Image 1 (cartoon, helix red, strand yellow):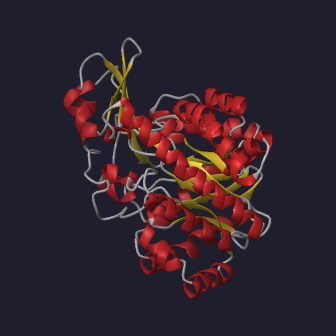
Image 2 (cartoon, rainbow, N blue to C red):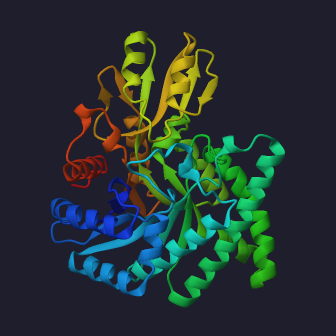
Length: 400
């Protein structure tokens, strides 16, 4: 839905369906109720997650026409697509395969181009739109600095091929589209600082030279083109896990001119070990599930940080010097405490307060996708949960 602070939606990655027919069935079952509860008679925006298999099917003209007709009939519009998970995301072990294939592969490039073609066909006139994507690769797949450097170079080259396509799409359709790169703990771009350093030191120099050669643009024109089409997906949960401060993030982005394609409104788990240490360790064990990656960043008593690739590794290595954990587990936004555990809800409130004062993105997308793997006492009907999430965001934005 459109608000004074941008278009507010949720990501359909909560709904199962790697095949388009299955995902479309989930949308038909859930969206009418959610739209009625949240938007009434007003248009309702949807953040669409499309797996690779689903994208192939949806690219067929007759299938895309059917979906467009359903959107129109139900007063729903699509303006962002989640292109991070390529394959299975439900009822399977995902873990680090969420990055597969990464941007070192042509499979990722071809898939992302397909998503942009779909988005260009769905996007309402007068709106820009974005596709989110992984942070180049998964850092732990690459053992040496030389290997990491090579992966970054290859990934950047593929992103520049995509940039060419986005320029062509805009010329052909008039639709302004942007790739929203999403830093994540243990990604090649682990945090916003990594993203900005890559953008400034790798993407801009290579991209400017590329566009000067292929499109005949001046250096300044090339820079503006890159800034327009390659943006940041600001996931609040991911930033909080890395102990990043929203004020510092926004200041760093402003200094480089990088735009925020979307704000993903999401919350992580937080464990304060100042008391009840054993009880809290036992409590966090309930979130050690086998489907998704749950990276942990521990803050030690000397304020140093230690990264763990998953929750089980952190649990086996806990020691008395660790004062706090931030755990990559997308928990419901509207709950601040889970028994003796906490969430990073305060980071959401801080970020949205800054956005309310001076909006820094046109799009806000709620992205709590872990409902099915939460402890049983936290699981509620999906439709009701999504409505409650978005109503909470509206309250924080003071838009009710």
